[in-house]
Length: 179
Image (tube, rainbow, N blue to C red; front, side, top):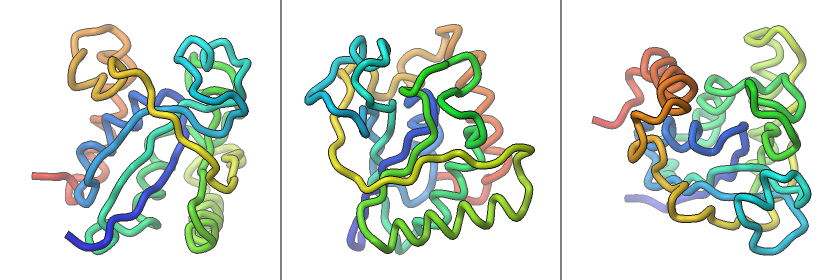
């Protein structure tokens, strides 16, 4: 395995993003957590209350020799709606915002390029409102949030919200699935 890189992405529910990225070839690990806020070590309840400034996010560790940051972001922009400000589906609040926390100038530039490409391709009806900010801190979510989809498939939220996103991802990126 080559030198691994880290991406920190928020796209609404962290369970949805984790379920998709877990299946993406080149991804070494995915951790659900919180980023972009002012309160150290927030709890899920703190973040859900919307008082901490954090977004539900995932930290994706990936091998750039297998999966480029550009391609990772292309998947990211396919599996969530980057045009809804502080909302994903019925989840509403700043904790559900679309955001990319870049770890260096190269990630910042690539993120800007992908946003431009997605906007120009008119994949989404509205304008992309994804926040682009320098990475500061990531706090892992409580253990019961890790691998939530895998461990709770029969839960209604998993069946009606996460499963359709995973199905869409598998169909669109079949050649990029882990074996």
